[in-house]
Length: 159
Image 1: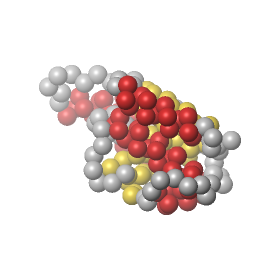
Image 2: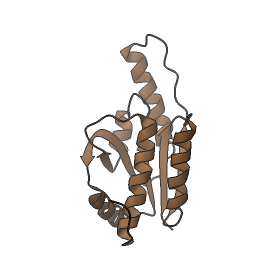
Image 3: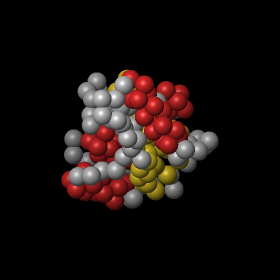
Image 4: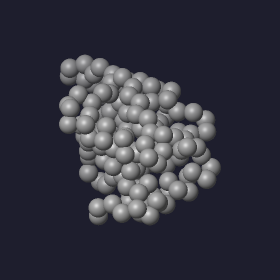
């Protein structure tokens, strides 16, 4: 069975985000083996300098990359990535499964993704030019993955 992992920086603190993610993880279980992996959010000092921010981005990036394997297809969610419709995402996921049994979606922390993560990614995908809080991006990613599976299965889902 296809493995879909969502690797994210930080824990969801609010119950409503946790509940939304749990619901989509449950729904995805009918189509794949979903897994949510959280890596620690690095501490940023008050009045952080650009160097402090870069250090945090790089440390979080290393933690994210530790969760990827050589044969994994990695999709980094990045505001500058490729925008795909739900149907295009469904087609893309279907094509990826011909060569890969594990797909990893990576969501960075509030400062974004390191260059190393972006270089490792097989695809950089965006949910639009808007900036989403990383907690909301997690829910949107899970919903879009679920929608892609529904589309590929020819099943109805609200539009």
